[in-house]
Length: 497
Image (cartoon, rainbow, N blue to C red):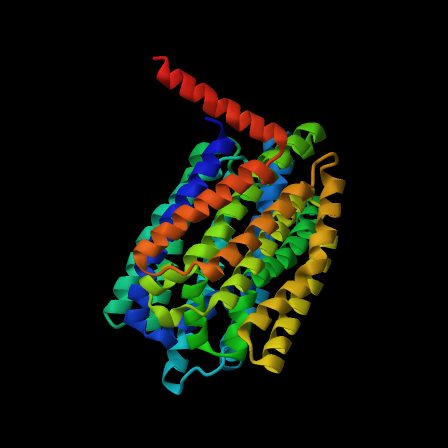
């Protein structure tokens, strides 16, 4: 099996484990911590994700540099690794200042934190900040594995330590250690995961090592990592916008309710992003050696798969989320059909934007996308908060976010075309996906189900509607013929044995 397929399988396994963990752990955590502390924890995670970009993003930049320079000598790659480590050290004071600012202004960033929870909230933020420092250092070995198309080794380790870390957090919360306990468990999980990844990289990366970089190496890696840092901050902001705005304008209890109501969307988004993560190392190598035709073909297949997964996932979220959330967490945690549709709309828009965002990393020319992303992200936050303040309506918050990001839907595909000429934008498939989602919402307004039985019925209907629409309208005619042919051949082989 190719490394690209192994990467995809490892990412999907991580997704499944993460989803099951969330199903089991989140209700137990909210009971152990309480609604307010649970909301504080989730809000702090998103805030510190933003601060994490202040480590210079050297390890993330190293992934794409290693993939892009696949044909270079071993010493050159070792120098790139050394340059990434040096840049991480140079950015450390800035990272510490960013974390300190988050801790100091936590009451302003998350409204209505009670006086009794404020000290432990700041301690939690401090521990999560220290975790960011560790992640940046230990992420160098992960970057080399991903850049050499061996990400499946790193993803498998991350999945294992994710389980251990979540169990430790739950035990800490249930034993009364609260926010401080879950912060300490997070740090320990990152530390042991990083050590294990370092050992695996030393074993399986033939050129593994760190060499003293030349000034030209530092300059080249620094110029790309600086843009990568801003890009990573923007990506974190995009993924966290709803939680940050809700926490700022409403409070931590509303964040808790939103976390449960948007749970499925988070994992649909994650599995969609895995499509890009699985193929970008191979695409980077193709672009690096000038094989644009193969890169365009691989990108077309990846985008088509992305549209299918998004269609089925979005239809499932529209039809299944109400019975799922009400049965899993309780009716109080479902925020209503219009908020649910807003969650779906934001998710779909973000899937399309983030895929094109990922594709632009492999060309090592990311300045324009960073500028566009920064402007639209700020605009999305301002419009979302303003529309909520002026109307008092949570669905209008999502309208503001969608309007703020709308320019990227038109700008990013043009940027990708410059890196991967000849690829297909698949506009017909995108339109078919949107029409299918709208039809699912109309169905949800006349067909209301409840309980786990209703969830199962809705899930079956979602698979039938999303799957059939994908086969008939979303995928291209060539792909449809290929799928039908494969199914027919398999059936013929099965019944002729």
